Image (cartoon, rainbow, N blue to C red; front, side, top):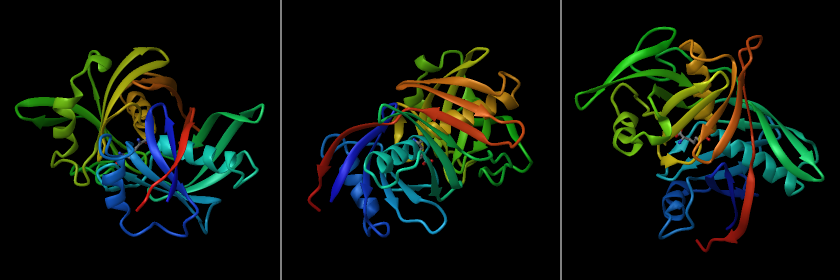
Length: 278
Ligand SMILES: N[C@@H](CCC[C@H](N)C(=O)O)C(=O)O
């Protein structure tokens, strides 16, 4: 099986193209080859497949073998992949995802090279039961969640996949390894959750670190950055656009008031191509 190693701000993937459907055993492949010691090493597998509703369909499998509904960094990589490899010759592409439907993607190309990728990530889902959480209500803002005697306050946002955003004093220094896994699997979140620890540091800047559902600590999370901007607006902490600083670099996020859609702009990089014997 041929693959291409790609990343978005260090959130890395093995990208597969050319199959008609998701291969059997994709979960086992993910566990085996995402392993950083006994495999290739990645946060997930990305399959770019044919779609009946869009130019392409993307499936993302986390490194623990679970399928996610959406992945912001992977969709930027998928768009760059199909453009660079001549599978499409337009810079406006549509990509279908499980959790967020068909998403329009725009590539900025300079001297034949993809510089940035902007994705219309759609409207955030804010209803408690739909995120999903076990809480009722049209919004889940600044609500308590208790873990081993510690009370955190979180805001729930789904970008097709679930996120719990928690504000801390210094996100880059935060001990996410202790609290991330406990919050990810808390019973308040029936499909588990991605967990973002965030600090608003300026009128257009948020620092964020992420513990991802099914992948643990990653260097960046596109949907997490979108969820963090939405949460920060809902909590009255920032305006409707900002740079979100992650361990692997920055993403620019806008939540458009007119159509309620969230837009994410950032880079995507190819590292190398390889072949797996399976
Ligand atoms: N890294 C991603 C999100 C990948 C899926 C996530 N771990 C989940 O299970 O929801 C991103 O860039 O959005």
